[in-house]
Structures are given as structure tokens and as C-alpha cells.
Image (cartoon, rainbow, N blue to C red; front, side):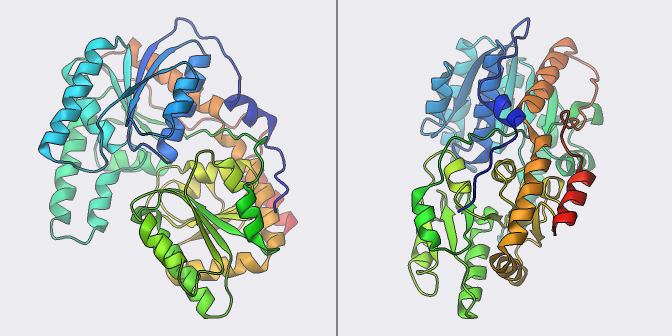
Length: 431
């Protein structure tokens, strides 16, 4: 089991009780979809921090979101909305728009901040119709995924969703990109003017007081343990991971792996994990809230996604000193320095992933060294730094209701944090 060394104090303080008074307070409506995963974790962290700074925040999302309890526990009103993942029936979509309209009728707010594709669609349509300033954080530009889906209408869907994004983004007050890759894509695809596209990295706080999950600790059986913590959907590469684990098992070099998550592929994953050759070396658990117990029980996080924004699971793992094995996609290389703070592989490449998993399994010392470097590098992704930038953006939007605004920039590391080069150098000295 990992030692679970403490996260830097600055990271812990940012997420767990720092109160920074702000005046005058703002009235903010946060709208999000999907109900679980990294995106609502980000919304909950942002909301709690804004409330501690004296702002009035209301959050709207799917009624069944597991994050509702945490949000309401912070004294924040949670408004359920009938938002469904993907494109629903015309009646379902119209119902969501009507409920969003009614919400704005009864909710005085200075700015509406929408998160994710579905909330970004209905939320922006209604906010723009009601002349409310709207900020959009896509958390991954999902219209590009249309071309990855094997269906005859893929190109038509891509063009339609790209056109919709352009129309909505150009009428939004600002777009927040969570990685430089995402910002460059927004500008390349001409979604919005450069001065209104703001780069604000996700911030993450971890609770180092939470003990490692005892089920994962028991499953280790004295061997290294890698783990997947995330949504069980095709986009996260979970089937690629299973293929790589099966390949290693059939070669006689099995790797023990814990898979923790919920999602549309849960039943399929459960069936494969329950059969040879994975049944003895792979454990499947539903995600029950809070990444820390799962991450503290593993030696490396595995996230072989086909696309990402800036995944919070990787940032949380880094803050806890757990290196990540992940696909080299979108914003991931901006967080992980390959062969220093983690290992990067091509998306969808089963052979490459199997090779890296075997290497990690055979070299626990390498994982420990990478984990130490990852903990240092994680200081760039603090919650306070993120909230500072978002709060400045809200005030800028309200101060400039029309016209250009200064574009966002990558937040500087906090005092005392290692630069990327210093972290790389420290890692290589240890190897």
C-alpha cells in the first residue's frame, strides 16, 4: 500500500476551509451536466470556494447527482433540472429548456456559468434569450468526438454540432478553456474571439485524512496495484484497458488492477472482469464518492481516454503522490511529464498500454519516484489559483457587457512550487 504522504499544505488549505472575503458579492448560477465524474467535482469545488468568499451561488443539475449532498451541505441551493446525457427526444429537450427558463425566472443572478455540452446547449440558449451574461466551460470539445463514432451520420453530426457551438459561443460573454490544447482548438475552430477565450486550469483539492479503501488494500495481495477511477464509458478507454489486461494475462505476466466507476459500460465490464483470464487479478467496484480512498490504495492511476479536457482524477492522483498512466490526448500532457510524473501512451493502442503496464508492475521504485515528482508538479493546479481566475473573469464580464475583454492566461505557480523543469530534473536525478 502507498504511504499516502501528505499533500502540500497549500493545496489542502485551498480546498478545505480557506475563507477569502470578496466585496461586493456576486450572484452566480452554476449549471452542469453530466451528474457524476470529474465535471461535477469541479463545479462542487468551485461552488464551495465561491461561497466561502462571500458570493451567493445557486447550482442546477441532474436531480440524482451524487454531488447534490455536498453542494447542499455547503448551504447552497440545488435546483434539479431534467438534463440527460447526449441528445434526447424533442420533448425531453424542450422540457429541459422550459425548466431552465423557469429557473431563471425565479433566480436573480449576475452571471450564468454553464459546464459541459448539454448544460452548455440549453443553458446558453435560455440565458442568451433572457439577456443574462453567460460563461461557458466545455470541459472537452465534444463535437470532435462525432468523427470517432462509427456511424454513417458522423460527419453530418460533426458539422451540425460545430455550427451550433460557433453560434452559441460567439454570443457568450466568455469561454473558459481548461487546457492550452482546448484553447488552441477553440481558436482554430473559430468558436469565439481570442480575447474572450480564457485559459484557466482546473484546480483540485484532496483530503489527506481519508484512509485508503480497505477492499483495494486487501486485493493487493502484496503486489503492485494499478487502478482506474472514472466513468465507465467508451470515451474513457475502459475497454482498451481490459484488452491490455487480458493480453498480459494470456502472456503469463498478469497485472493486478482495480476498476472503480459507474456508467453505461458497467455491466459489460462486470461480465469481462468476472471471467477468465481477468477474474483472479481484476476487481470492479462502483464509485461511491470521494476519489481519495481509491487513489491512496493504488500505486498508479490508469486513464487510457480517447479524449479529455483536464482530468481531475489525474490532478487528484498527482496531489496524493500517485503517478498516472494515461493517453497522450488533449490537456493530459500539460499535466503529466512523460517518464517523470507519469507515463503517456497513444490513445487506443492496446499493445503500448500493455507494455507500459508491465513496466510499471515490474518497477515499483520507478512508480514511487514518479509519484514524488507528481506531488511537486501538482502545486500548479490549486483550487485557490483556479477560483481567483474565475472570480476575476466574472467581474470582467460584468464590467464589460459588450466589447473585448482581456484574454485569460495560464495561472502562475504559487510561491514555493517547483517549475516544470525543476520537477523534471528532480525526477531524473532520482531515477
